[in-house]
Structures are given as C-alpha cells and as structure tokens.
Image 1: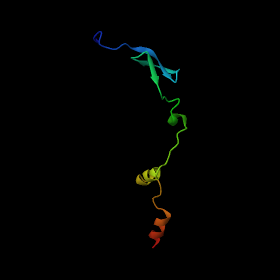
Image 2: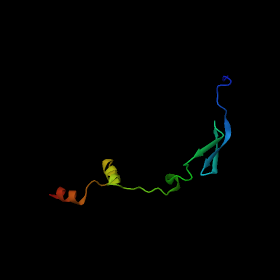
Image 3: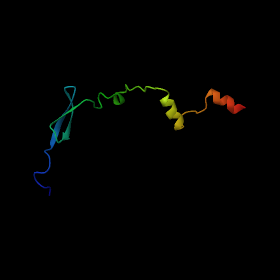
Image 4: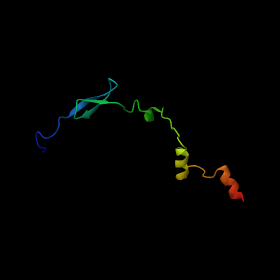
Length: 81
C-alpha cells in the first residue's frame, strides 16, 4: 500500500502547450506544460532538417566509419605507381 500524502497529485489529462496552442494531452504531475519544441515543429520530425557541412565534417565522419570510398583521385594515382 503506498503511503498517503507523499506522492504528487497526478493529472491524467494535462495539456501541453506550444506557442500558445494545445498540441497534446498527457499524464503528468503538473496540470499544464509549456514547451518550445515538440515533434510537430521539430525539423528532424517534420523533414525540414538540413545537414550543414562545415569544414568537411560530414565527409570526415563518413570516411572515419567506412561509409564512403576513402580513395580520392589523388590516391588512385599513387596506388597505380
């Protein structure tokens, strides 16, 4: 049996607000939640995410983990000699 008066109040229909509008209801210990980002406006989930490659970081990652051909045209010339 749980002890009485030690657990927070449970709100089974707590409303989640993003930019002033209700986006979903969840169970929570607070009656309202105000969030800046949720799956409906996050770039990853909406498909608007863009990979910004600064200083060749993506290519370096792909080379490091073998996800791309590591030989470049300069390397091919050296390998033929």
